[in-house]
Length: 256
Image 1 (tube, rainbow, N blue to C red):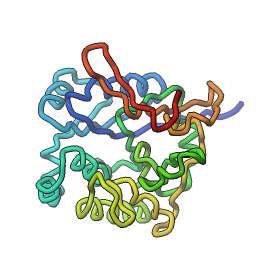
Image 2 (image 1 turned 45 degrees about the vertical axis):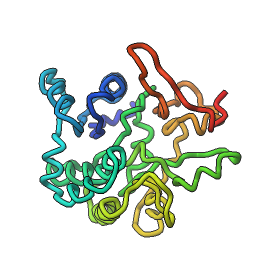
Image 3 (image 1 turned 180 degrees about the vertical axis):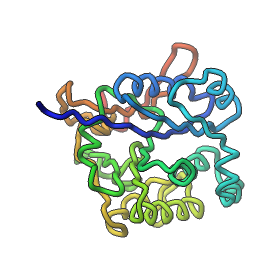
Image 4 (image 1 turned 90 degrees about the vertical axis):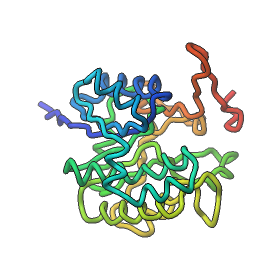
């Protein structure tokens, strides 16, 4: 009989109270497709933290933004010179490093909160077993290659092992983001994202995820993936306008 490998999926994400409905949707998909799992949530405001504290959802560990800032005091200096969203981007490598340090996870996978699991990610984790760091390509079609000025890779799925190679890469990325993480293009930099372009060049055992069912998004809709092989979809540009009124901005991707 074929032996079935059981994974303990360790994920992390972050969002504030305004983003709560989208974050809860991600959680529902994790519950359905990623058992057993552990999810760390960096709550970006007090209201979000109080919600999860009250609900006390199994397998969810909540982290206060203040705790992250106390652990990494340089964050406060960065907070003073950038916008709210730029500051959130700055927190991405910090929350990964904090979890590996504080909770001693063997590996941790960061997920953007505006994503949804359609099937088990087991095939992705099998693919990245022997790497130290795993990153997600945008997979732009030819007519969208111009968007690579924002980065060849998307900060939507990032896996870091708790080892020397991974720690070296994460430390470099963290320091770079604290120094510069802005929503404009400057000398091959853009937010927290374009730094990923040089990961493979600078560090060992960095793997680009090949599974096309993971990292599905409006910008790579041209790639046809069998329904059973669809792993994770990124609802980029989805916004809640009012109650049940939603809006998407996909014009740039020729989604229609």
